[in-house]
Image (cartoon, rainbow, N blue to C red; front, top):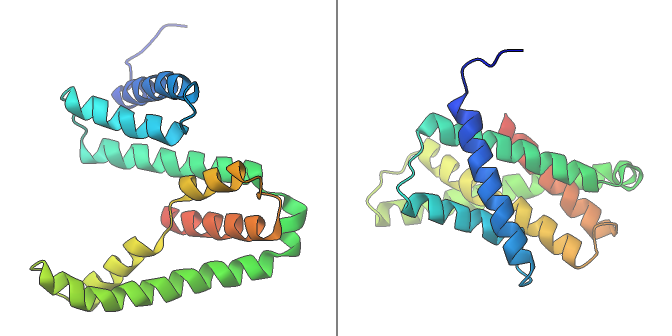
Length: 169
């Protein structure tokens, strides 16, 4: 089968994943998390003069969210999650709504201080941006402390999946 044109997105993604894997392997020998490898990859590529178009960054972020949700899905104990799904949904939606409202109220105070005009849309967007936790950090902590199978671990995981699923829409 003959080869056609090569997709620059796939080539760039392959290069980033290769570099990240190489760095993660090296950093694992000194006890560092793979998240450090991803951060270093971004720094190295930026220092080397690499620039990405907004559409490419958008595609990479979508792939990252999908992979993150896949990893979170692998960790879900479906039986425990189904037993506690109501609590996970209530906690997840409650956390999103309460922190969005809190940070939107803070936007009324913060945005004018940095010279931005405040309206309902900008305040809500500010609140939404600050309400989502870092899934990769929480997953790493739950794995490290071996709390993934506990009730609080399953509730955290359910909340994270709910939040990240919200980001896809």
